[in-house]
Image (cartoon, rainbow, N blue to C red):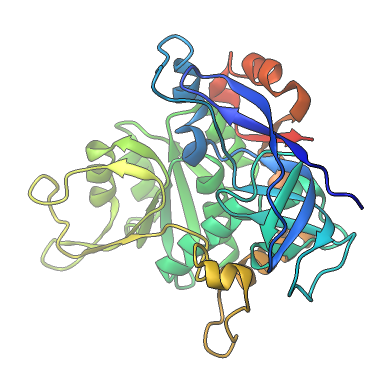
Length: 352
């Protein structure tokens, strides 16, 4: 195959518009593969700070924010193999992740360790969820859950809902908080107990835990959340001397005052949970050899492989999160229409 000299790439701008541009094809280097992209998934929290926030830029544009390519999760077919890559061949179906690599485009040059084979019964649209499902998996691993624990997920976007589902699979009992009725209804499709994040959420959560209190919580939201964290602290299990106990994992971008403002935090562990596991953003690993499993059981790649297995086995229904499928050639027009009701946008898939 003759590698095209140009590719199409979606860009985001400070005016709240997603545009398609043409740019030179990245070079196929040692340790990389060329993927003809079939589907890519928008990560609204990381890429756009949320569809609602991004849509508001149309009325209040930022002239200093120039259009730039974005995206970090797609799936497609390998068209060319770079030097040193032995585990793939032309025609293999793969899911791909990585900022600056797995963009919203028709062709992507991918480090081979940021790709994972797609099982035969996993579609390209499903494979495009690889990055966000692996992120959710890393959150659960960082949380070190035990069977039967009660966990609260604050923010039922894509990552929050997937995190709650993985907690279910790990033998835990999650409850999800959100202020968006659409997100609450979507989470219920996974059998997740939900509660509107308002003044009544404390009583609802204590009832859910049968009075024992939460063992852990996940902040999968963004923005100021002092009040939300105070409510979480009120819902956590208590020690005999009245101190709140448990773990809070942070995967979103919330802001809250830790010292002095929030009472009872001294015995709560706070753990940041970014990325997808070991290896991600290590260029030597991404383009080279994987870590030995005996020394590093759960790398980004082994997490990705398990994610694809869970989707293929029907244990994680990512299709229930997809609200829009948009042809890449019509991305500006169709995203503009969709953003008229941004509160009803979750999984948005671009189709080259």
